[in-house]
Length: 481
Ligand code: NAD
Image (tube, rainbow, N blue to C red; front, side, top):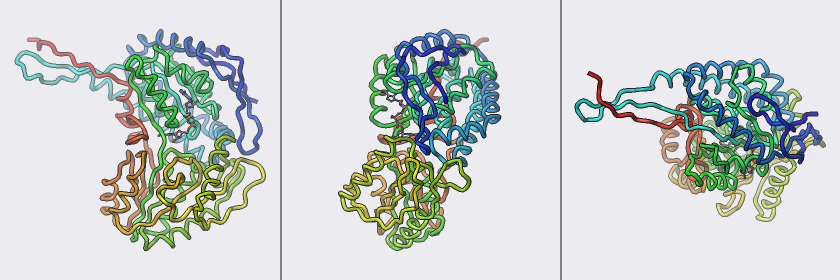
């Protein structure tokens, strides 16, 4: 049994100031894996003090040296790849091969920012003209300061890598809170940062929930920058908290992403991309393509193909060979998705999806495709975060684009079309931060990730992900003779 009653501050494990414990659950066996402290604002205070103390020394190190530390973190994760993926699979419920993919994504991210840090040194002091004889400007990039980082449960070690790696590369010190629902994989980071030789206070990890740790982080005046990934209601409270002291904030929030399929699309490719977009991680993805918008000429064939693929999924123990659908992450998430399925009944939504045989154990729901769903339906408009797909048929690309954009969210989209140029033309019309044409949902570290509209503010990954932790300073001075 895992006991997360301590906080990692100043390179030491110290007892949490809270005596309240929360259970950590294995969603397949529905049994406890251990417990975590709820955390306490006093824990945040101690961690922020440590991070502030460490900041002057850390920001003064060459970025290339910080990059070397990130490479060691990547290697530390690589050495623990199977162990951590197994732990993640048990705690989150995702099939082992998906958890292994997460580990690879996290490792790639630390490696990418290890290199980006070197490039940061190279561009410091870049000379720029000012249009005045005898004067020139020099551009420098400096870390924002102490970064408060908060992540959700659906992609363990990945969401955190997208924040921790660029923050450390930039020269920020970090106060990081993993989710209390799936906190186990991230604990290994503490051992790994010690191996990497990070000075005390540079990386601090606080266990706990939103009340004990999350809100106190976002409200703490000693935090200079907030980066949050999670739900919209919480994102709004983080943004309100950031307003006090005018602190920069990055938000990665929810989605209700569309997948658009034209009449000339390859049927098998369309089916596979629809399935991956709604059943990977049991649909618990911010970028789940949960609205299928298909040309009427292909609609019936695609609906039948998706129904057959959903029925052919193999739900089961996420660690068992060949399992393609795991349970939902916890009872609250199971209740939430079940409520939407009940709502579909109330609204009289139509589905022909056969149910795969579900294991007796585990917090499973049957994947479902609802056909020709009214745009007023709650299932069409709201983020469900489960394997529930709503579909509508259209008669033109223009109608498909308008329908896709008729959403409060704008995180991602997929386009499946026979002609790649037509796919890109459709993609150009979509209000989304990432659009994949005839492709899986790739999110390589050199890319960018983030949403338009209510899906968030700012971008993670790539150089934008690094800029989020940097301030620009421009120094204008006489040119030396
Ligand atoms: P959540 O908002 O409930 O929790 C996210 C994190 O915030 C957790 O660590 C939680 O403890 C913490 N938290 C809770 N209350 C807080 C508060 N008042 N102040 C600060 N922190 C607080 O979200 P969740 O249920 O863990 O994750 C699901 C949501 O995350 C979905 O809406 C999903 O779309 C979104 N998400 C978005 C992305 C993206 O990249 N856009 C990626 C993954 C998940």
